[in-house]
Image (cartoon, rainbow, N blue to C red; front, side):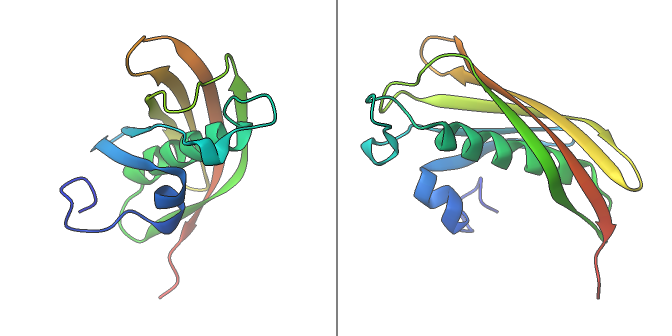
Amino acid sequence: GIIAGSLPAPPMAQTLGIIVTEAEEDRVVFEGAPSEDFQNPMGTTHGGWFGGILDSALGCAVMSRLPAGRIYTTLEYKVNLIRGIPTGCGMRAIATAAHAGRSSAVATADLIGIEDGRLYGQGSTTCLVMSLKT
């Protein structure tokens, strides 16, 4: 798969410079470092990068809980930007699925600095769970 390197990361992940590094039922970890391409006018990382890595981890955590034949789509997600990310600073998004039911799912995530261990952001999502149309 993607972790082993036998499958490429999705285009969105490639653009953001993020990759899934761990995946198990209920928990998924993404890592990446924002490049200069994601700087805001103040010279720190744009909030969209926070949203991209957190939403990716949150969605994959939800998917890790769904049985075969079930899929999800994000209904809403929320991101709290706790501190600015310097360009090139390695980040780890750790997402956990809190609930995955017949029609909805909920997950939360923390965005942690890889080198300093500080909390940079948090996210949460609510997803609609559906049957895969065949």
